[in-house]
Image (cartoon, rainbow, N blue to C red; front, top):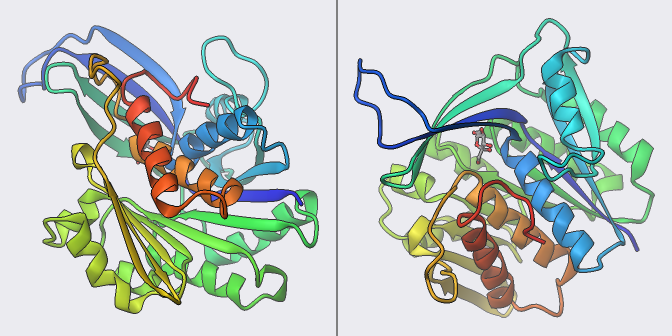
Length: 329
Ligand code: FRU
């Protein structure tokens, strides 16, 4: 049976400036390099997932993106669409079914200007997104288009949401849960940017898998992934898996099953001799999500939670020692 994985989220165009140290306010600083590439959490996740699916022989898969883009004739839209099809020597290209909601009055995609600080190996992201976010009615309409065009009845479906506006995401998921067609769809959510803690509380009861960042946890006063996840558990569905990445502190996952609660933690992955420096942490979390989605969809029974977590953690660890997302499969 074909496994369909649909990711719903924003696509960005990233301009990465490599700088020797963080700029001093109101001074000038020369960058040593500028790279322009397609970004966005779901785009990055799909790019990695696509390689994994190809490399590990899981051909029985189809990957989909549902996203808001600017005017369909704009240069930004063309740049983004080209990043998902065809061959390009400069960038790893991905072959993904893209369903777009176009904002006809806008020429510009969501964009990030990212300082890669070589001294401290940090990435500071300044982003701008003037495209109106996907609304619930738009989601319902477009989700049906994804269904009609590519997803055959009876197929396995996994819907992954970048939880950009938690209250909208909740409505989208509620709609899916109440539609017979989607009764068996598995649903995951990534919560990366903390808005309000209530946003998380609203979403937690509806998802099968939830990915949270360290930023979420620390913003609301938690000092460890375990303490944060423990606090979420009472509100969740049965069989939920919660994951929290902690940067150089590794990652933790917890699964609530009928026979009890299973905890797993891993330390951040390091290359065998620890000699490969960190060169690009942009999208490390998105890569982790790709690894976990791969585990859930293609090794649901033969990999334990510990194996899924270790795989995703290593993948994210390898990603930060290279630029971009190529060659991770
Ligand atoms: C990395 C990323 C970038 C993008 C930004 C959006 O996780 O998706 O590619 O510019 O985050 O928040």
